[in-house]
Amino acid sequence: MCSRWWYRSAFRWPEFSLPMPISSIFRWPGINLSYFTTGWSIGSFSFRQEFLTSYAKLVGNAFHNQNGVVFVNRIPLPLPFPQPFVLINHRGGGEVLVPYNPPLLTPLGISVLKAQMDEHRSVSLLQFMVNEGLVPSPEEEEKRRNVIVKLKQIVLAWIKKVASQRRLPKQQIAVTSGTILTYGSYGLGVHGSDSDIDALCIGPFFATMADDFFIVLCNMLKGRPEVSEIHCVKDAKVPLMRFKFDGISIDLPFAQLKVLSVPENVDVLNPFFLSNIDETSLKSLSGVRANKRILQLVPNIENFQSMLRCVKLWAKRRGVYGNVLGFLGGVHLAILVAFVCQGNPNASLNALIMNFFETFAHWHWPTPVILQDGLPAPRDAMETRSLMPIRLPCSPYEYCHSNITRSTFYKIRTEFLQGYSMTRDLLKPDFDWGSIFEPYPYSKKHSRFLKIYLSASEQDELGDWVGWVKSRFRSLIVKLEEIQGTCDPNPTEYVDMNVTEPNVVFYWGLNPCKRNFTDAVSVKEDFMTNINNGYQGSPGRMELSVVLTSELPKNVLADGTGSGKRTKACWKILDYYNQHRIPIYSQHLPHYFVGYVSTNGEPVYPSAGG
Ligand SMILES: Nc1ncnc2c1ncn2[C@@H]1O[C@H](COP(=O)(O)OP(=O)(O)OP(=O)(O)O)[C@@H](O)[C@H]1O
Ligand SMILES: [Mg+2]
Ligand SMILES: [Mg+2]
Image 1: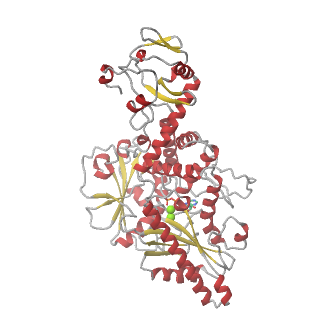
Image 2: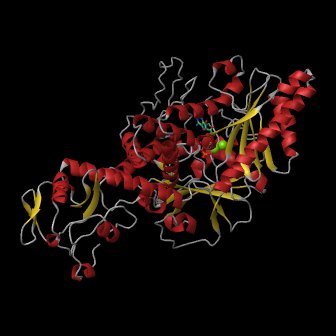
Image 3: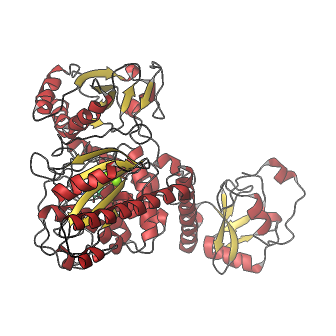
């Protein structure tokens, strides 16, 4: 903004020799554009011809008369100018000051201004990501790399040990090997400091899952000082070990290839390695294969990674992240983002985000989202009944498992539309990335919530219990939809620190139009029948009740909009990673939580937090 000193000062431009003084004085905070409104008479300049020429290209015919009145396309502009100005860098024409008033600009002026704004928004989004700490520090990255190196060494030692136990000939023992391949968010290079590492252990033909992986390797890991909280999930669609290594959470499934030696960077897309392998190994490999294919198909990996990081943050903040509660998981978002990247190979980060919202705000679901991979359309693609079908980009071209319901579908689509309406106008002068990533204001949007209180007598039992109940949440959402039309499950998990027993609490927004739903007893009975069926551990407690916004604890209200009136002193948001990480499943629950197999036979995947 121009301050009065500017108007009063005896400053005179000797000639209109932009850019130096103007660009150094009139900067939009943090922006590469000059911006000011009133108090300055352009009539005091003596224009250079080349300036007027450039100006005319961008704004139209511009000149000023003796009285300092500037005419644009023969229309006199009142002085001082009522509209903001921007300094735009016009290729070939130097820097030119034009009114920030799109209707006055020529098509060229508009496109130059848009290019500038696009660049500015991309730069400020990258800065926003840095401020939000989305990218782990070099030290954290180093730590993760070391963990993977150590895991590879352990796997190699394990293979040699198993080979000796099997009494393989010496020369075979010498050449045999296994490896670790990362996938999930770490494999895509979009992890945050709190992400786990999804790592697939690949062994040679003689290493078995039942004995060698789950017994020999598990014992070797248990013997390492870096390893803690190790859990085996054996009879799942994708069996795995989950543990912490140097404090970092690891998911470690296993695949066996019919070879003696597994190259360190084995190409899992090569059909040679897939021949004759068992069904479980094929399923375990699918995460790595899908990741690899995504990275092959996107035209610019760096843009894809930055964009996916942003989109994941957006989805988390807006309460639409997480497959377990019927929203989008990491793999769903990766494919949606890759789809947009494929269609816009040369676009900037800002343009990609704009296109993401535009594309999916208007997508004709249930038309599936399918990446173009240059191969003939697969005939064996499995059909899906998902409301938002998203297909994995590798054979057998299954659709990502999804728990989306009518309510969560509606919420995701509303958020896409909102993102679109907030980003669509590139020339919006007060645009701010912070508003796109604003936490979803649950306490403002809903006046009543379903409180789901889960507890167990021991901390160790709580993880299993919560994991089990979460794996059945879809049925609770569907039940609420039956009773009162919609519901808005907030994925955030809270802990009531006022209660001594270990607990986890959820608050789901209820439909404001259905105020007659106040008694959760019948819903509880119904849901209890569901969760009591099949749980093999010792079940914990579950309480359902309807609470008003004014009864929400401080942390729930502190979503950026809450009034924070009635608060409980000791509430905190559960953080599985920074505290003692509770295993969300156990051997008793593999089919439902980590098990990748649900009751209806479709694959189920663990939540990011679990
Ligand atoms: N619903 C699903 N359908 C198909 N594959 C899935 C699904 N959920 C997970 N996977 C596979 O498991 C991998 C790891 O999943 P995970 O839930 O850890 O997501 P992520 O992308 O690593 O995100 P996060 O950073 O939240 O951990 C995915 O990359 C994908 O290959
Ligand atoms: Mg992960
Ligand atoms: Mg994982």
